[in-house]
Amino acid sequence: MKAASPPDPTPAALTGPLLAPLLALDPRLPDVWTWVHATMTPDAAHDDAHLVRVARWTLTCAPGLSPALAVAAALTHDVINLPKNHPDRAHASTRAAQATEAALPGLGFTPDDAHEVALAVRDHSFSRGATPETPLGKALQDADRLDALGALGVLRVAAVGGRMERALLHPLDPWAEDRPADDQTFTVDHFFTKLLTLHQTFQTPPGREEARRRTEFMHRFLRELGGELGLPYSN
Image (cartoon, rainbow, N blue to C red):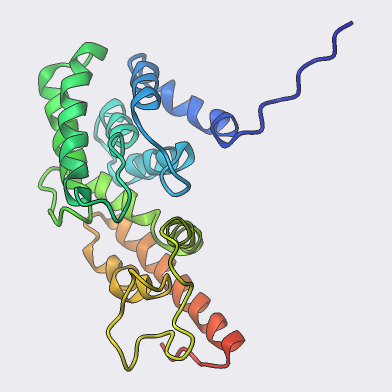
C-alpha cells in the first residue's frame, strides 16, 4: 500500500482551518479568496495569515455591518502588495481598490457593494494617509493597523527590516534620542517613526482598546531590549 503523503507544512496550507469559518460566512467569499490568491504577491508580513487576522478583527471592529463585505475588504486589502521601498508604495492601496472594484461584480457582488469594499481598501493604507469616512473603512483600517502592533508587530517589523536589509538598531543611540529617527536604515527606528504613535489614529472602540494594550506591550519589549543592551529605554 502506498504511504499517505505528509500534510502540506507551508504557511498557506496551515492557515486553512482559520480561513474556513470566514469563507463560510457567505458563498461568494471562496471565489474572492481564489482571486486574491491568484493576484497577490505575498511576503512574510503580508501573507495568508495576515489576511485572516485582519478579517477577524475587521468583523470585531465592524459589528452590525455585512460580514460578507467586511471579510471581502480584509481579504482584498493587500491584493496589490508593493514593497515598502517601492516608488509607487503610496499608491498601492489605490491600485488594490481599483482591482477589487473591477473584480467583485464578476464574483457575485453588486456594483454598489463592490464600490463600498473598494473605498475601504483604498483608504485603509497608512502610506496613503487617508482617514476613512465609512464604517467599513474605519473597521478595516483599525484591523490592519492592529497587526502592526503588539507581539505580531514586533515580528512583522523585523521581517520587513530583514527583507529591506536594514540594520537592527543604531548601536550607540537605539532610541533616536540624539539623532533623527531613520527607519530606512535601522529597524528599531520604525517604532519611533510610526508604531508607538499609531494607536492615536484608531477610530473604532474595539480597535482603540486593543491598540492601547498592544502599544504597551511594545514599550515593554523596548524596555527589555534596553536592559539587554545596557542602554535603558525610559518610556
